Image 1 (cartoon, one colour):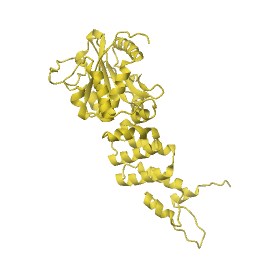
Image 2: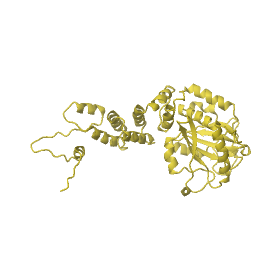
Image 3: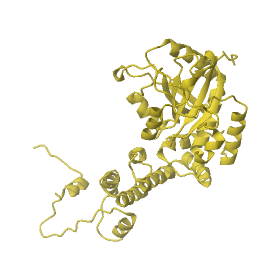
Image 4: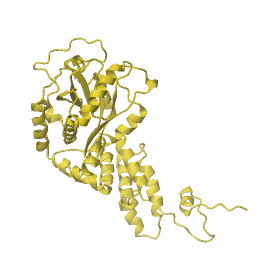
Length: 359
């Protein structure tokens, strides 16, 4: 007869544990908080720690439970699980759920921060500047923390550095969202009505926004990125069926941000005016600084500068930052506009599309 064995912990879970006749067995209560676990540890009844972790992991991921219950289980898992990679994956899943209550976001982040020293370093600086954690900033925090050559900067230092760079650039300012198609109704005059001024929007920009702006500024000024955009502008304009876009990621090894293009999936239909992010890009975007899109379909596309209303809606829905690059001055240059999930838009100025020196 083939013998089938089951771990004792799972027999207990199923309520099937068989005890010898005449013996009594006090089934221990599964602890769901640190206080209950400590109380249980002082008594006779014990439950294997891996069983406690397993069931509390399930409990902390159960969105049908109240926030306080899930936070209790999360705290206990943090106490018992050590450096369990499966637990870390669960925590990242919690951080990625847009409908997760703020308290659970914070608790999940604290668990991850306790195990990830690179995250803790920049977060400490961020927090002193009035920053409140949001899951979409985890990529930024991890990459900044893992870049030993990148010094921490206060909010004031970031504002001064960004402001000095923006002050010497020409800007294509906008007063409203960009139109979605090539049917371009006149946009209302910008004079006195610009919505993309850095200084005007400063109070609505977080520490994470400021770092994004700093890193994107540095990226766009690099000769290798300039050369790549010369080619991209030419090829995107020649491609009249799709709009180009992708993700911006922080490369720790290189110490800077880079752009990665993602092709539009054929199943989403073709449009030369709106980039459709494919499922792979959406998934990868959870570990990226921002999305980017090109408005390169015309050499002089000034009326399409900046994000559209749909771009702003998508940023709010996906909790994503974005960057729009638009060709201006008969295709000799492009202007850059950054935007965040709260609908704040910032002009990053005009950059040349002339071939830069080979450096």
